Length: 245
Ligand SMILES: Cc1cc2nc3c(=O)[nH]c(=O)nc-3n(C[C@H](O)[C@H](O)[C@H](O)COP(=O)(O)OP(=O)(O)OC[C@H]3O[C@@H](n4cnc5c(N)ncnc54)[C@H](O)[C@@H]3O)c2cc1C
Image 1: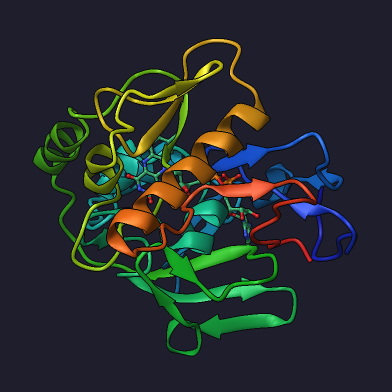
Image 2: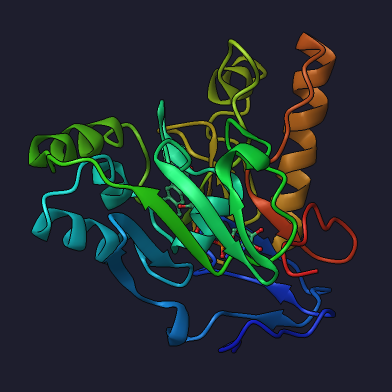
């Protein structure tokens, strides 16, 4: 647990582990403590600690009539995990109203951070996000975001497995190469939404990696498109990103 701006540099930081595939050869893991679970208004801006869960953010915005965070109601995770990958639903993204992020060295403005669709260049620990405040919490949007999820499976998963490539959908490509519903061991590409890799019971890390590689090979062979992971793999053999270092 990290409860100050000092942290070990040999461990990997996780949020609430919703977007992770953790293998047997993972580095030591660390988490932000409750010290970074807070939300407050200061100098007309919203200050949110990186360990704050999405549900708490939405409740606060509802209570204080703050707009633009309704989509977080259906996004499992903490603010830190959302900032790291610019999480969102369609065009509703966590960076939209971001003003700055507090890192160990101090605040960095949004303009100084490179970000795009489900990616940022954040490579160190975010301790706090500061957001512009716009009035007008819209409860009807919560239902709209719930509806957007109606084509997604309820089985355990890490959300969308691959990022959508430009002008296409990873789920469509996986389906086109015949892998929708395809199962290896206990893991499968869901027969409800092909870009959700689900654990049907007893699925292993190796099953997941085998499925991932199979989809990447088949999609590349047929479409010459390289599917890029949205899920972060934490295993020394495949480590895709290390925010903790
Ligand atoms: C059913 C389901 C549906 C989902 N749907 C969506 C969706 O529609 N859109 C979407 O964008 N995501 C979606 N996700 C993924 C997930 O909700 C987001 O990625 C979320 O931001 C993960 O937050 P987390 O706290 O669990 O992060 P983790 O999964 O623990 O970590 C994710 C990454 O963030 C880094 N990280 C965590 N905290 C910090 C920090 N303080 N500073 C720097 N880096 C940090 C970690 O090192 C890791 O690289 C879904 C997941 C599930 C399980």
